[in-house]
Amino acid sequence: MDYSIESLSLDKLETDCVIVGIYTNQQLTPSASFIDNNTHQLISNLIERGDIKGKNSETLMINVVPDSSLARVLIVGLGDADKFSAKLYRKALSAAIKTIKATSCGSVTCTLAEVELKGLDFQWKTRQIIEVFNDAVYQYSQTKSIKPAVINLKKVQISASEAVKADAEIGLAQGIAIANAIDLTKLMADLPGNICTPTYLADEAVKIAEAFPNLSAEILEEADMEKLGMGSLLSVSRGSRQPAKLICLNYQGGAAQAKPIVLIGKGLTFDSGGISLKAGAGMDEMKYDMCGGATVIGVLQAAAQLALPLNIIGLVPSSENMPDGDANKPGDILTSMSGKTIEVLNTDAEGRLLLCDTLTYAEKYNPDVVIDLATLTGACLVALGRVASGLLGNDDELCDALIRASETACDSVWRLPLWEEYQEQLKSNFADLANVGGRDAGTVTAACFLSRFAEDFRWAHLDIAGTAWRTGSHKGATGRPVPLLMQYLLDRAHG
Image (cartoon, rainbow, N blue to C red; front, side, top):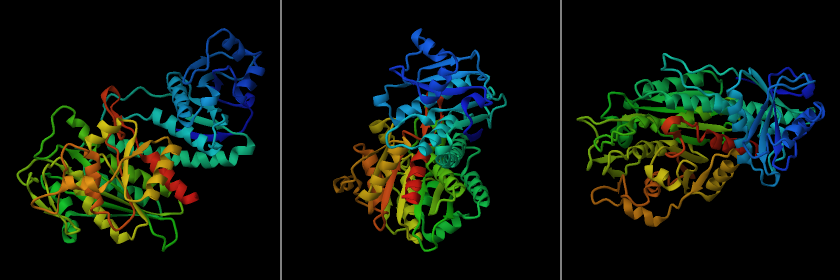
């Protein structure tokens, strides 16, 4: 998709459709008023006739605009002006692009960045247009011989006056980088496990690093991990014919001595549950168990594309979890890189076994903060549904910053407690700790397990089991939490 900023007057545009807004009190946005005044009150007449009331996400396409150079006008309902919010803005944008996709329009000009949103500037609104529109036109076709229907839309212009054009251009650059990262994340996640193996994921990370001068990649092989004593991570891959990889991306955009932000993403390219085999129904969706790793790779690409003045390390422990004669067994005792021993009570709780050694490995970077993200627990889906990702951590300042970023990015999180009492559930008679703590508070006890390997740095954990992909007829990756992490990085870079 070709995105650009356009400052020409609406009556001088070359575009197949102009998108304008209307509130429930029939108040028109400035661009809608301009068109109305230059078309003998065409929009006002349609409102008076009751064709559109302005409810949020309501749309009306005007396919013929008399006495005008405009080919089409799409009117989008914004809702009550007094209650208009960031999420309602994105909802209106979603309705607009859904309507446009169903037409033959090859180009559109969106004027909705001009609407008033308290505390949010033109830069943010421009970025959201690109994120929402790009998400809507994403199509997976890599493994289909019959390709999806072609979407005609190829060009999106965002209308901005000269007074706000500089802000719009910044929003444009950010939006394109974030949209590209989301596309990359979704594509890697949507690929099947027989294609997107740990080796494939590592190869893609190397290709991305080669495209940017400040981004480098190092891939640790199983022999390297064995020398480091990563007995926990390597135990997960024992049942698979695919070798494990530890993908290390290093982006140096800040001062040489500045402590890096370390992002760790679970990269389990398929999770059968191992010996503790999952139920067959829905097991195909376990290809999405690498969404955390895909997100980290996408975010590092976006950071490099935007040349953020930060140092960022991306670590992706990648493996499969399969049943085999050499696979982990319930009751096995593992020795982690930290020296802590772990009793495996359930081999399906393998993500934390990958992450704990990677958290220990992260110490070598002397990090400012460490954020891990993983499709870790079904309990998080039960607790929060598919709306919010779970957030836990050992540092209030870091968690508060992620919450603020989530609110700005409209990529919701909800903080859960990480109290000492929950650690009791991880006690083992035979090791330093068990890898599961029973049915109660599964998301919390999983984070408690990880916290035992994050005691020497500021750390936060994002459980994205409910938000990283959609199920049912719209099955597919969402690209979350790319927007949240990118907003956090932008806040750090420009705060």
